[in-house]
Structures are given as structure tokens and as C-alpha cells.
Image 1 (cartoon, rainbow, N blue to C red):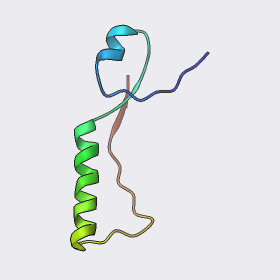
Image 2: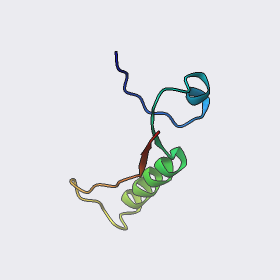
Image 3: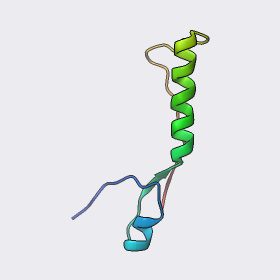
Length: 60
């Protein structure tokens, strides 16, 4: 059996120490989303449909 999951807290690691999770910084995710939305509202730098923003992820 395999499970795929994302984790941004240490709770899962404490409960299931042998499990590996994909981790991303939740603050950075939120800050990036807020910046994109604020720019779109103020029309400072309207993003194109295909523009991508990458928030680093770590497996461990």
C-alpha cells in the first residue's frame, strides 16, 4: 500500500516517523498567493493565463 500526502507540520512526522512527506512552506505559499491576488486587483502586473509560480518543495 502507498499513500501520497503533503505535510506542513511536524505532527505527522511525530506520529508516523517512517513516513516520507512532501513539505512546502505554508507561509510562503500564502504570501505568494496574496501577492499575486493583490497585483491582479491593483492591475500592477496582470499575470498571463500560463504564468507559473514555483514554491520549493522538499521530500523527507
